[in-house]
Image 1 (cartoon, rainbow over the protein chains, first blue to last red):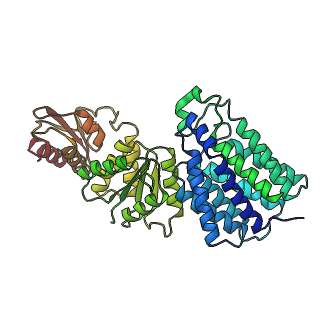
Image 2 (image 1 turned 90 degrees about the vertical axis):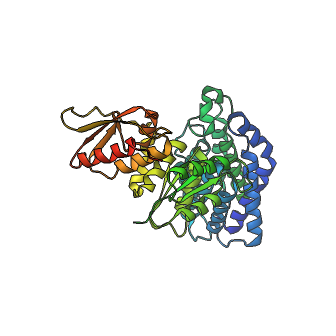
Image 3 (image 1 turned 120 degrees about the horizontal axis):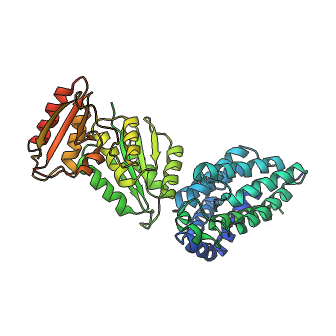
Length: 210
Length: 222
């Protein structure tokens, strides 16, 4: 079985940084519809800071990479996505520990811990029109793929597919958390920016493993 | 007992600083710290600002953190979990009305309340403060009616003094039917100079409480 190494984790983070940079304006445009319009800029600033730290002192384990992402996002992203994604990466780092190679079960554990971290921090439930709506289907799909004996790369691909569908599925929802919840039914028809950026990061994880 | 410190977290630096200014008027000896805005001075919350404010507010008696919108609360919770070393007295992050909860927390801390008492005061502010308890039996409590002497009326500072004073007695004290330990309830009475205030005290030290409160309200309290 082709386990995922530190190189994968580094490629994932670089991929996330690249894709967040590319979609920065689009993410902020989504956020402008139902939030405060800074999601793309905030995340882009966060991931640029992550890249600078990775270049300065690259960690030697996947868990080390995830922890660096966590602490950097928490301290550099000014909006809610800082503590939310920061906690996700922090719990993911804890789930993989000092392992140097991650099998499919470890990938599922990583994603589950990340999702649980977002739930812990934001206290949102599925269907609240938040990033949980991307993470939860991703975790379910990853678990099913691992159960079916798929390799880590295929597990991540399944997670990314499900996260993208989950993000699209936030469009008809009324928001129950965050700034968008003040809008009531006016949030209907707009995709949740946090779910969208989470799907982008999970796609980057899958592409780094492919 | 070490004092409780309070941190105000807001998306706006000016809101956080304004709250410190407001609360300091009633709680001049409490460690009140502002953590507003991003590191660049924009609108948002900064992990570093929150973490360092908690550190500055920590004098061993615990720290209460009060935030405005969701991400301020989340940033504060993250900081409270990740601080190393964690404040010895503990950190409690509260999602309560920033102004009412913050002022109630500050006054309680000024009166020497411990972390639990400060948290309870802040949480009680969420409901508006005024107690809805029925008036005690007329035969039970000691009562006296005084004319409010303070030339400025029962504004924030004398109201805070009243709350502090009432908190020193074991008896329950009510002014015009409102629990005298509820700062917001007392402020909501809107008593002005020359208004009459009916004081009721019930409990083991009711007479002393009545004398003390009547003395405060009936005299010029500065």
